[in-house]
Image 1: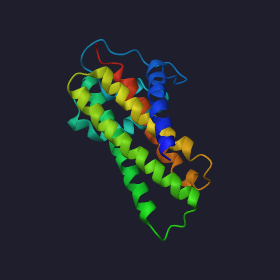
Image 2: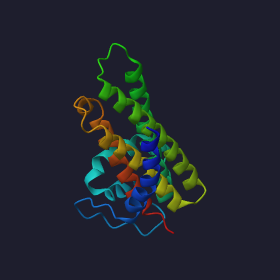
Image 3: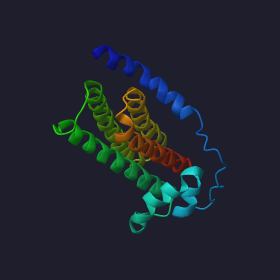
Image 4: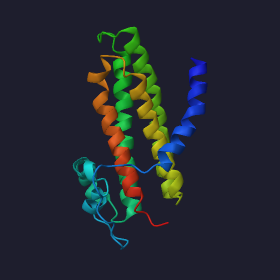
Length: 191
């Protein structure tokens, strides 16, 4: 197991470099970003094209606490991903500890590994918020990508576990999409 984590420690920075360096393809063109410092939630969510509805659903409820600028909206998006990832980590912990839930050895390992990955993702997203707040915008984006990579590794590590599909796939997909939304909005921050 230690060699597995050592390999991940070697591979993860490479994946993050590739993830940050390659543009995300959304399948449809994004709306042109506004040229002023003010930005509506709708305009920000248009940047995430195919995830527009999810973006609106996650950012609109916090409308009163949002600032109408790219940094404030990026912060709100990071917090939305962090909340979702934190809830998933709690969910995984509750299933892992539930003796009434019938778990195969493979599913048990998947739950433990994903729990660790989600805890790491939450930590990276917390750091992303702090980096954003200090003006380290590129670092913030890299940390969001690192959190997203943890979720993707959870997904890949459990893809052969049949029970995984009903337990984690939708949660992993939503966190991945929320990270894509966050990264799309973050591109609007003037450098």
